[in-house]
Image (cartoon, rainbow, N blue to C red; front, side, top):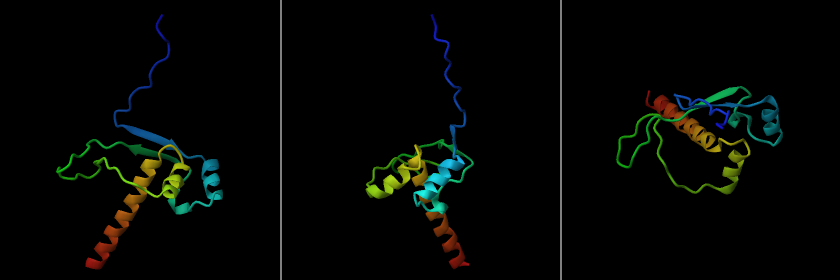
Length: 110
């Protein structure tokens, strides 16, 4: 007999929705985490990139590169306690730093 359970349909855009509850947000605030670095209690959509770059290939916006690096254990733990998508959050934090640096450089050059 065939199983009656169906696989969930594949998301064609490769998107994942992460719902942060108000309780989770408050719990993270109570742990002393910086409110500016937390995801707010609303649904957040994350999309996988469409292209993974290879060594020597031109870097495209929204492409991913596999790297191996060592981070301080306390940094990893800080992101890990926030939830299952801690690598995405590390990437988002790095993106904010890079974007802020670009804005700063644009203001200085003007």
